[in-house]
Length: 97
Image (cartoon, rainbow, N blue to C red; front, side, top):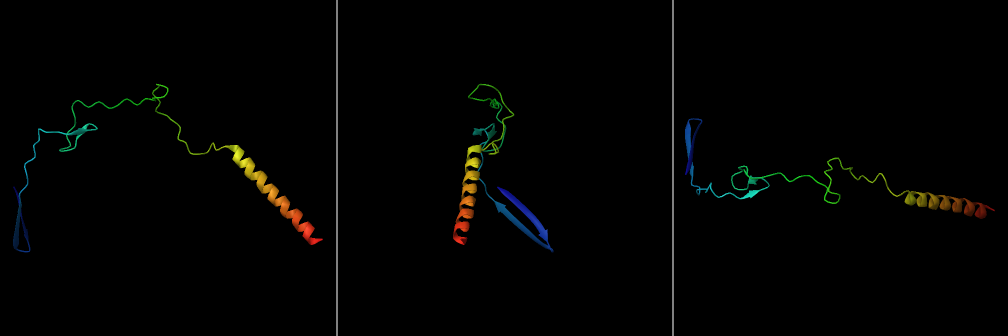
């Protein structure tokens, strides 16, 4: 049971709260810490950082940002734009005559 007392503007305020006892001997460890009380797991070992495909420890992996996008898509887009522009010019010349 917990109790607290405070005085404010000459008045005394008191509050109590009953709490259940926590069994500190029962720990539930996850990722090296107890989920009940936050204590560190004495038997915890950090997993080794390794590349499971090649078996090498690679801590400097490149971030894939999309900068190496397929250039064929850009060439196709440029060609299509040029054809549309050329078709517009030819259509306007024929329509003007």
